[in-house]
Image (cartoon, rainbow, N blue to C red; front, side, top):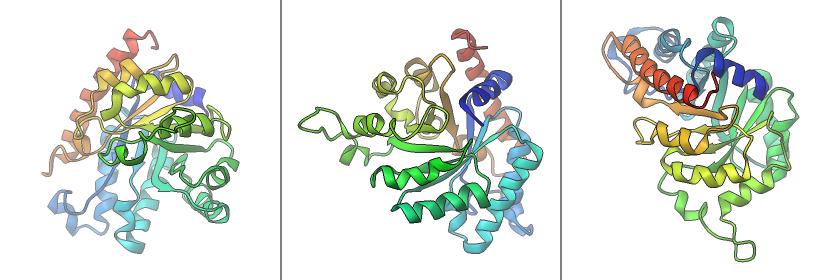
Length: 277
């Protein structure tokens, strides 16, 4: 899926919603724990309830890896279910990988050849040769960590280079554009840093941005759109806990849909205001 195809899905669904599948066995409804695969059964019902409202799903791999082999099986079933039933939806592996070249090659093989994700989040700290192996796959994406929404982001990402005057996140944005294109690379920019989106857009005006932090983490969708939207929308805004854990009762899927629909309605208004739909 290239950027134009992704934008077409945004226009068709009038939504730039990414639902994060951060599926925690301690938070899902208790009655699901008696099923053969609680994680997959939870994901399936969330997907069925929200697929017409979302353009992307983002499983956070930590929530699957923590269950060992069985967690990986649940993840694989989730990806296969989306592919079989909602093939238009963009699937992001929130894995935050990044290592020396031969190791990154194996990571890329795992997520793109074996698991059939559309994109994977990658940490840029080790530089170009740790990212390039992910970019050898046609129609696949690297989602590079640029400016994250956690408190610790201030430890490194805002440090200024004494020669260029650029902060580290700005250096990441400027340097990495030599590695990929607007059809193969997007960037993570946290919604709680929405005011910084203006600076991000000055450096990467045409790339898609994956924006976590809206909803339970307190980020403002209005501000994200104000500072981050471009002429092709250019945004995938992620909400995880605010949608998937709207209820822990038997109505959890219906409540998840209600929350997702509320976000989609707001997104539609923003797209209409920008004359993008």
